[in-house]
Length: 422
Ligand code: PMP
Image (tube, rainbow, N blue to C red):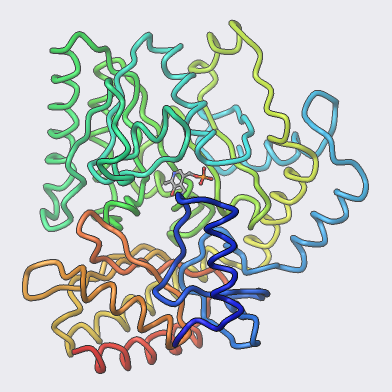
């Protein structure tokens, strides 16, 4: 499809007003005006199946979440320097979903800020400055955090005290954890050799930007032990896997049987309202708290906390973790069946409604074909994107209200696209 005259004008206005750093999805950019559940609608009223948006995690514009948000916005909308129940009710409720050792919460507006704050706290607690991340990690946009987000590419330099380690290799099976931990140990040794004390190992517990690597569950434990033995902290970035997406409880780290020192939260927390934060062990934030105050104007404001609580209500009342587990398994099974018929569709990895599907040419990653698949699906009105160091992993990550019917629509259109491009 070609861009309409109206949409071409929007593209030109974006370039003029927003400048050169913004990127649109798709060869033919989409102009969306409305969302409901797993569906997004363009200006002409066409429906697109959203298999990608993990922010609108309980469904686009969920009426219960919108009503809670609007109600609080119309009542009291101020910050955390006044007494108010909303931020406390929410914190206590969320803290009940993590191991008891994690008993404090702090609020930000974005995942980037949460990771930036985690780093400040870790530096204060450990006295170290070294940071270890995976080779294609993404953790956010601030000066410090972009410096440990290698997926931004060589144009965005890594910080001086940052070391990268190879992502876990699921092909190693039971050895995945030991090999990943050996990489972390090598990074610790390199930091130490350069006179840098390690402060943190931070990982996205589903390794989204590294290509979606959920299994074997448990593989993170030896790496978390290694960073702690070196005096550093283990931070679980739950911005992508958190809030039930993996279908195995609320948190990605729990699948690995580890208790992090800090957990960063974002995207799905407010289903679109900007609310994010950190869950922490109290001892790691003691010195930071004694030294200075922390105030984030919008972080944890009454509307944010009330909206986030409504998201938890929906996750519970609509059984979305169970749905993620069951529908995710059904979707992955459907993809594996397709993979037996289309050689371009390689290994499928997934946990709940977070599925990665590699596009390959024999054993080699095929980024060019992946790009064509993503754009052909967009023409077939299915929204998806690709990830991974080789840009050949389809990232399938729909709102958690995705049902079997939606999985069937996706599989049907995906099959048509694979036929056309094979
Ligand atoms: N961590 C991870 C794993 C993310 O995927 C993202 C956002 N893509 C962030 C942190 C940063 O979150 P935000 O865009 O809200 O700053």
